[in-house]
Image (spheres, rainbow over the protein chains, first blue to last red):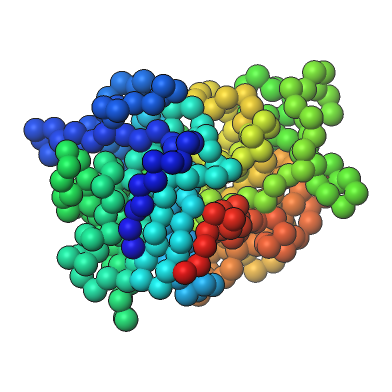
Amino acid sequence: MSYSPDDSIKNRPPLIRLARAKDRLMRVTLPKSRQPADRPFTPFQMPPFPLSQHRWLGGLGLEFFKRQRRYLAVLLTLDCEGQRWCRPVIPAQTCGKDGSCWTLDLGKSYPLPPGKRVAGSFQVCRAASIMEAIDAVPVMDGLHIVQAMSEDEVNPYFFLRAENRTGVGIPEEIIANDWDLALQEASGRMSFE
Amino acid sequence: MSQPNKQSSPNRFLLPIRLIEHNGKYLAAALADERSPDFDPFPLPGVPASLIDWLRIGSQTIWAHKNRCIAGLLLIHTRSHRWTIRLPHQRCGPDAAQWYTLREDLPALSARWRIGGSFQTKVLGEKESAEDCIPAAAGIHVVQPISYPLRPFLTFMRIGERVYKSPSDFIISNDWHEALQEAAERITLA
């Protein structure tokens, strides 16, 4: 259950850097070590992660476990121009019975569409507590969700990795119910008779 | 109670697709009277199950809190061939939603997004069938009957004047399966 940084990967996707702001909010900025092809973007506040995507990832992890009895990892991606979370990508990995050892090799999914960057991970692994789950958080800035499976429970834990530190994230501050947001956006054109 | 599809006023309304049956496949095409369509016909992909799940969960929440039906638009991008969903302008009634597809209501959508179907919750009367509430636009239409206990959703295809009941695994794609299949060669089992 780990991230294996492999510098030999030529087609490494662009990453982000997270910076802690005074008001506990996280700002997404450009990493210090940039690749030549990196598209610059204006720093922005990390948007809340959509609940529907979290559920989809949870279902994907369980589906994979049902099929293979192994654990899967997925990379979370941010559209840094649209400032929103977008479709996650499954990287090259070795899936084991306790967790996955994954890389940043995206295979045919490379390159990511312009403006999109890897901004975290979602991993399913065997962990009995948050203290065990934190071990799965990679040394890579972003939002990291660890879906911890034990004998009789599945618990999601949220972590934010920024400035060389891993902090525990509060679900209510990290996840947004996108149905509520969609209804809010559509409220001007919906009437309930 | 469903949406009127004003194909004759393309500037005011979101354009629908036209469905053509060709060698056992269903192709999404521009309307027959479009002079210079900006895309070639393409096989209509299945709607990702995650989008339908999202609409089902949300519409059930609205029914639980407000006792009202709602509708969602299924939109297909004519270049990337990907699906998305939007909540249209609508009146949400106690047994059905009535909706409109005015372009001005969804200004952020590019013209490449076309109506490829619909989702709606509906309280079906004793003599009413789900087919009766399928809108006039061609495409994939999903009806979630409101009942206790909740019944499975029903899936239809409209091609021209005809409405077909279609098995859901034919017109809805399992996007977990597709994601795992796409990544299969990058995954090794220890």
